[in-house]
Length: 165
Image 1: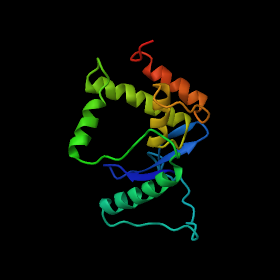
Image 2: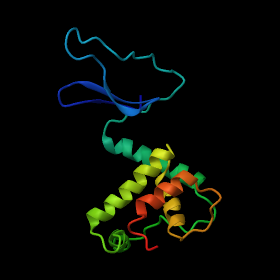
Image 3: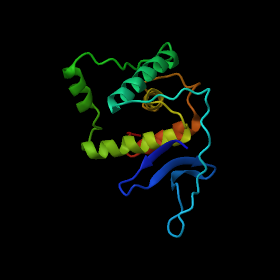
Image 4: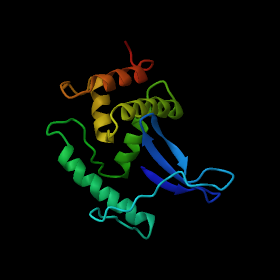
């Protein structure tokens, strides 16, 4: 189980990964006695469980973990820089994210297809790692020894109609 949610009708649903893929399942069978189809296992008491009062606390904890993992996983020599100094630079970067000849919706579609395909191939692919693969395919980074061939192919396919050949 990856995630547990209660929908607007009060039905408990779980996001699960199984041999055939990932999807949402209900805790109980619909109709009849509504028998449980999920067995809740006792918690592992050795595992620490964070509880947050407000969503901002959860976001803050996630961000702190992300920053610490980013600093340990960043390659020494990468042309990628994630530092944004001010709002003006952010707006410039946001505007530059639109692919020439496409509108913002079409650009987002191309990048979503790329990111979705690569993150499906590399289950725990960070945004930074996807950016490195994208930079490599676009010829902005030259180190190829650590680029997954399937991710490279997915990226080329996603960008095929916008890359000048």
